[in-house]
Structures are given as C-alpha cells and as structure tokens.
Length: 200
Image 1 (spheres, rainbow, N blue to C red):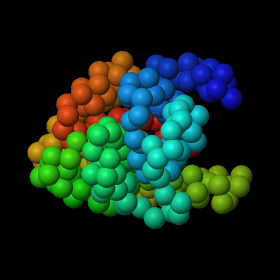
Image 2 (tube, rainbow, N blue to C red; image 1 turned 60 degrees about the vertical axis):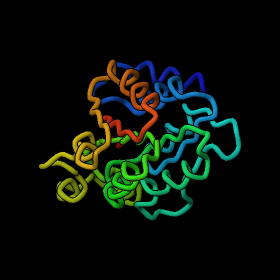
Image 3 (cartoon, rainbow, N blue to C red; image 1 turned 180 degrees about the horizontal axis):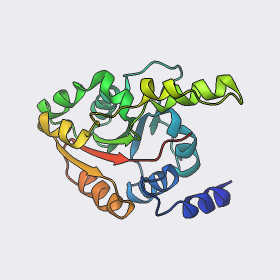
C-alpha cells in the first residue's frame, strides 16, 4: 500500500493546486517525531492515513461523527494538555470557519499550535457525499453554487493576520516545505494556508 501511495504521490508531485498526496508526504517529512496531529478535514482523511505515520498512541486526534467546528479550538486544548509536544492542526478551510475565533484565543494566550489549512476552495465533503449518495448520476450544476467557497476566496493567511498571528499562503508545491518549517520553528501560533486540489 505504501509503495502504491508513493507512486501516486510522484505522479502528482508538481501539480498546481497542490495534490493531497504531496501535501501529506511533505508534512510527514517535515514534522518532528512525537508531533501531535489534530485533524478536521474529512476529504483529506484517506491521504492522511496513507502518508502520515502515526506510530505512537495519543498523537492523533480526530472525531468520530460528522459535526464541524471542533478542530480549531480542539487543537488549542490538545496543546494545553501536552505543552511539551508540538501540535499541528490539519483543518479544512470550510471547517475552520465554524470556529475561527480560536485564532484570537491562540494569539491572546500565545498557544503555539501550527494550523495548516487544507484549502480547496469548497465544502468538498458536501460535494463528495452528494456524488457518493447518487451513484452514477452526474453532478448537477447547481451543486457548485452551494459548495464553493470563492468570490471572495478564503485567504487564511490574511485572516490569521487580522487575529495577530503569522500567516502564509502557499500556492506552489516548491514553497510548501519552507512554509511548514517556518511555522513549526516559530514557537508561536501560526497559520499555513495551502491551496490544494479538490478530491472529487
């Protein structure tokens, strides 16, 4: 399975927007051992499981049901509970908007969570669920109007700045590693907003 995943990642290595396989592989190679992952990104979950090596109990936090909005503040709670560990939160851009005020809390109390926003400019989980539930039925044109998050685009690097947090937007694959390292090594709350390809 890992060999197949590696091949898939290489086939999409330089695609723009950034492919989820490359995104997850770069995170895996950048984070330190013992880093705690908090994730609220439903459509990225399969790639997260393929590429991120979670080898220690208590270093992956996710949710069992389908509610949205717990990931942003939840990551703060995990960091407070495990202050000696780096905490990385992988959050879908749609899910992040449910509790964006968590960035104020992170800044106010200087809680050094690194938020990595998986930004495919849509509530992709809603679109994928629609397609899955309808089988071979073509995706209706109206669905696009309800799931896309653009006009205006959500730029989390600017949103982070409004809350007094360092933010960086990444649109090119070659910029990803330096952005991740900069955020992880800052020792303070940070946001990396990564433009990724939709899943479906």
